Each structure stands twice: as structure tokens, then as C-alpha cells.
Amino acid sequence: MQRWNRIAGIGLAVVATLMVFFQATYAQRIFVDTKEFLIGHLGFAILVLSLAALTTLKSKAGAALQVLVMLVGTGILAYCFIFAEDLQFRSEYGATGLDVALGALLIIVVLVITGREYGWVLPGMAALLLAYGFFGHLIPGAFSCLSRTRGVYFQTDHLPGSIRDVRCHTQGFSAVYIPVYGVCYLHSRNKDDWFL
Image (cartoon, rainbow, N blue to C red; front, side, top):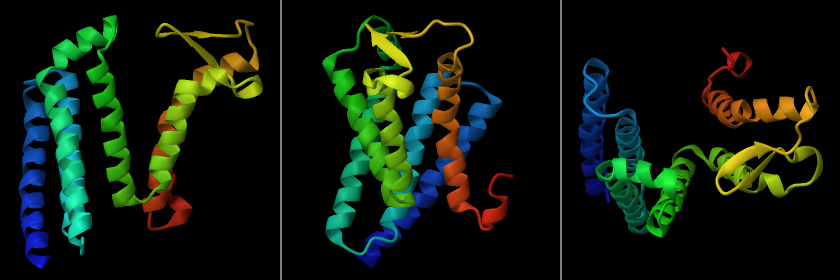
């Protein structure tokens, strides 16, 4: 198993170097659209995190599972990169069943890789926020914010100045920045200055 750990370490160095060149080249010359750049960035991140995990795994079963998750994630992202324009067009007029299945599988892959590398708190929180994003309109009372009808989001309460309007506008901020601050807190050396 140590031989495979070393091979994964070499692959990690190569992929991380390619990721740096991809980022640096894109910063100098924007050679792809933003959506393709983000897909490529996520692909490199999946490869880097998977290879980093492979450098320390001790069992062949765990390594095989990690390789499978890595290949599935990069395969889906290769599909997304190649067909980015078609996916954008279909997202405006109705995604196919394959698009939805691959998107759901990609979310699971990202959550699994994140959980294996950083612990299960962040993926659990992300899964909770995803569930709230999809099913939050079904919750009655104070936690209900948005309703969804045919892909169009609208506020259920149009009273100006109500607390619901404030919560609806700050919900997007919370869904993005709460996990970011949580990760900063978990990875800071001094827990007293994690917010800096």
C-alpha cells in the first residue's frame, strides 16, 4: 500500500502544479468562459483532495472507494466542461433527466470528498442548507421564506418592511458565509482570532 501512497503523492504534486498553471494562465489570459473555469477549478479540487486522501489511506478498500469517487467526480465534470453551452441552454428551458442525475451525483461526490478530507460537519451543514433550499417553502411559520413554482422563486409575504422581507434578503448571505466562517473557525490555530 505504501507504493500506491507514493504514486498518489507524485500524482498530487503533478495535479497541484497543473492547477496552479491553470489558475495563473486564466488570470493572465481568460481563455475559457467563467463557467468552464469554475468547472475546471472544481475538477482540480476534486483531484487534489482525492489524491491527498490517497497518500495517507492504509486499506485497499478505502483506496478503491476514493479512486471510484474521484473518477466519477472528474468524469461528471468532464461532461459538464465539454457540454457547458448545452447545459446552460437546457438549464434555461428544462434540464434533461441525465443532467439532473449527474448534478445530484456531483453534489454527493463533493460532499463525500469534503467529508472524508475535512470531517462531516461541513458536508452535513451544506446538505442541511441544500435541503432547506429545496424544501424550505414547505415549512410553515417563521422559517418559511420562499415558494417555488415552475423554477421561479417569489416571496410569499409582500408586506413592506416585514421581518420576512429582511430574512429573505439575508438568507442568501447566510447560506454562503456561515459555512465559510465555520471552516475558518475549524482551521484556525488560535480560536480567539478566527474571524480575522
